[in-house]
Image (cartoon, rainbow, N blue to C red):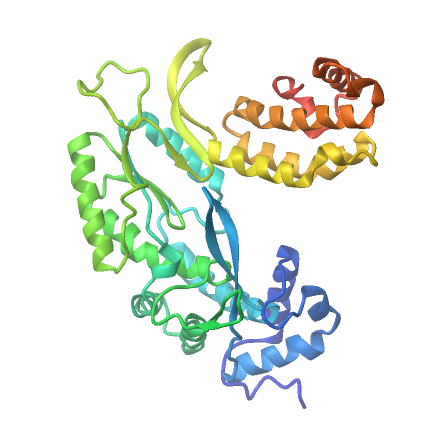
Length: 420
């Protein structure tokens, strides 16, 4: 009987494959090198998912090349993103789920990236508390982390946690899978790198960094506090000399593990706030970015008293990225739609921006929504002839009138500080 699972050599069931596909389908995503979309695979599961299970359970599964896509990184730079095929993403999800159950409980409580019941907000919250306790921060940046992970060291790290042959087998095959560049040529990894964008990559990155950094620093410096989200690391210190010495040791540790600290972006930052003791010398850096937020001295209200704190808010890089997205939408040219239609198009995006960037300092979003209001004012001037040749202030007043009459039209209008 073809559904008999008793004679399979690898402990992978059809139920695991089906559950993995449900998660891949929920996350959506584009097609890989074979051009198969999630909808195509979903419509014919027996044609695509059953052979996948059959190959994975028998050990004969080999992944297809990973399609490389370049996405904007900022300042004209591009970030390579690897997109496996839908079937390969399902296979990676099966192994990633098995690996997570094995390794997650061994990870440090200060590791927050891509872990169940942990989020970026948890990392930001802990970082905010530690910035109030410690005066200095090491803002670490690893140069080309996903592109430079050594395969031999990574496989040793996976073997440290599990000896399951099928996990080690498929992890090795995914690491060795070639990358298809935009011009169609195939590039072999040559013993290093894991494509950023694969389902298995975040799990492997956590396993690697847990041994390279988390366990190492907890053993050498058990009193040191840090936050790590994948390859984004923030380390807290009491004194500047200690921070400088620790940074040198971290650089040495990374070199031993075939990684390199980005000297241009790594810095020691002073957490300036209301305190009696301050350094007698001029401090070069007093702010840093972490997970799309900028930590810097800000005036905060504590028990009715205004004080200088060191808190996070949306970073300028994040604002620029969202503004570019708004410009690409060409809202001011959508004169064929009513304002309610534009509001419905923007509602899920605005809700996401507020939920993520507004948790710690909602007022930091004023600059972001000021740009959106300018686009809406241009839409009013293009839409209505009576505003076209008049001063833009009249269009602004019209937008403010709409806001008073329909305060829930746009998601952010229900917050008093974010209205036009």
